[in-house]
Image 1 (cartoon, rainbow, N blue to C red):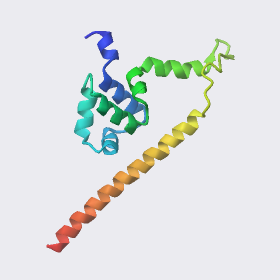
Image 2 (image 1 turned 90 degrees about the horizontal axis):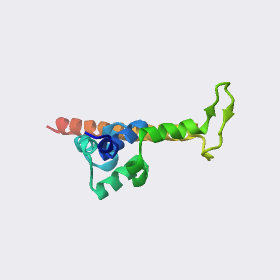
Image 3 (image 1 turned 90 degrees about the vertical axis):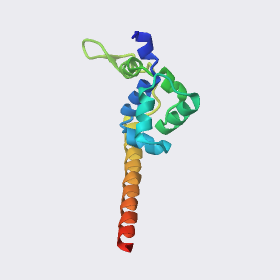
Image 4 (image 1 turned 120 degrees about the vertical axis):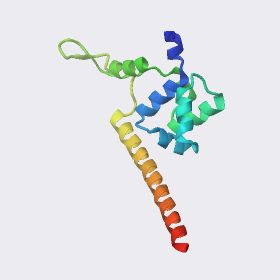
Length: 139
């Protein structure tokens, strides 16, 4: 398998972005209204249709282009170029990307979003349990 094929494996890119967003396959499946097995199949697919890619991008909170152009090296280079230290610890090229947001604030926003998602999932499971218990008590 060539390196080019690995770099263009859209399913791996989706999987990596999902992992970087600290999201489980189940959570992504819930957001998209599909099964976890379908997410697994998507992540194992080298290509997916454009409409499905749009749905995945929306659920992950990124653009389609971000998925298509994602690379681990690019993500690492982005964060490394914000603060690049010389051998003496002096910071240079600190404003290369002119980041207009605090990454920690973004991380906290993601944590809150994930917390809300898991709370909704937990409530859905509680509702299912209550419904089954109600059915059993009715007999």
